[in-house]
Length: 270
Image (cartoon, rainbow, N blue to C red; front, side):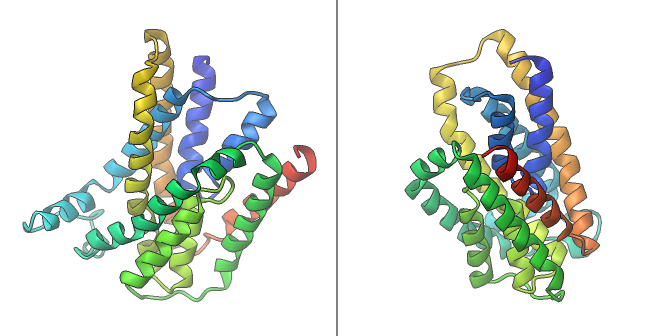
């Protein structure tokens, strides 16, 4: 892999990890277009670590507050993104755990199915169209002001677990589910990104075993770092973009893109 390829794939990972357009679906499409198979797990770990760091740093104050709550200490007065109403409730610590359970179970039970799905570009195209329909349907959902509870966090967790299927966007499914449940839009997005941390971190940690067994060379590390750093920078910007779009009530626009890319892949790649 060249540095230019690593740069390009880092941009793709950073954009699609948080924008509701499915990073896994785009990976399948690009592999098919470029006629390559990215079997090196090392690069995958580097770029996913980059996007993981992006969400950790963006939500660092909220994560500190949740950690302090777990340790039974008083949260910092400066939490949130500069506004009091952006602080996360202490109860979110448990809601994130509840929402993570379905993804853990589904991931373990259907790992082989997911691996096979990465070889089926036709399936990815169909799923992308379905994902687009879900996103567009949020256009007609009236904004609500409900708060997360045990049931709503579990339902969002189920939505996240379904997104292990290539073509089904994790952020798209979780934010859409929050909107369907009448959760306040920016809160739905915040919860979606915080909920991604255990899932992405867990999957990355599991892959570290393969990295240790087949460590990259010095030259490869340089290339992988380019991909990882790029995915971090682009991922951080993507979080800001999604939050602003959700706040403006234009989240459904991503659905048009998903349907378009899904139909194009069905017409020309399958």
